[in-house]
Length: 465
Image (cartoon, rainbow, N blue to C red; front, side):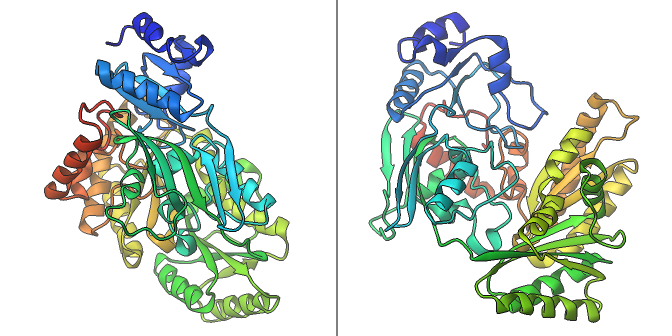
């Protein structure tokens, strides 16, 4: 059943007309994430406001075998929130309430549609801190962040989203509501089903509420930008920072191309004296005033020893933000000024320099006119590989050849025992390459798990598996 009028009537018995959208503009707007490789084609868009409405929608889909695609802020880059085959699309933007802030437990409970930035600001207004952060914070919704186990820049200190989730309320593919773990910090009474939904990309059910951990905000933050003459200096610098600063919260890497694109297009001042092959942006949380002196001493020694060729240490909040902008604005800048094909991968941290050299060699041999911009979270092995379309190439030819270049990227990832998806999920984009990261035995077990929670296969069909 994917007749628009029939579906509109069916779901009109659950939601009011203004929350059942069938016009072409709405279906195109809500039907795709930031990845532009797939054409959106949902049959109807539903905007629930409560867990009970989500339950009614899924129950109706289950009873009528109607495929369903969950959708949030749609900031993903793997096609995971894209409806391409007339599916019903359920978007969570009307479920954005902050339900509770508990200062004793240091937790925040919210609906799945709450944007990440709202969680951050709410925590700070209560003298608490939610550490997960990435550039799409204003649009990315908590439910999607959890469903893809998002990471961001502070994984090196605080871990992925998985480490921040205490409890979940979910609706499974059969319409059952599960309250998983509540706000318990210790619960060893059998299998932790909550963990199955974190990173499941909406293939088992829909997350409707979450209880998240909060922590103490840092007294202050120092950011340090380093220019490096070669990739081999990255790991010794990382080791030095980890050994010297117990509160190292980020260690971000940028190649010359993405760094220079931000400077060129965003009017951001380059604080370094010249151009370098690689850049590192370190973030260190300040516990006491003497920490700043230690930061200056450590990086001065790194410069004297030739480990870095240039360095700027932030001396104010504004300067620290200016340094972070050089990293934070990369994705947006590349997307605005180029047609790009993105890949989000990870390799063991110690393999990063060798992997980057092999990756660039392989792509250069296969596609000598391509420009490749790589940046990412070196502290956790996560790299974002961006292929920029040559001006003389048509979009159609570019997309076709990019899918060929994916094989080159993923074969390199496989050689280094990495993952084809670090934090954006598998979705549609990487589904056919899952065996590069997972064994056949693992994939069969995943199919078995999906069958338990979604026996009719209606939840985000065709994604991941």
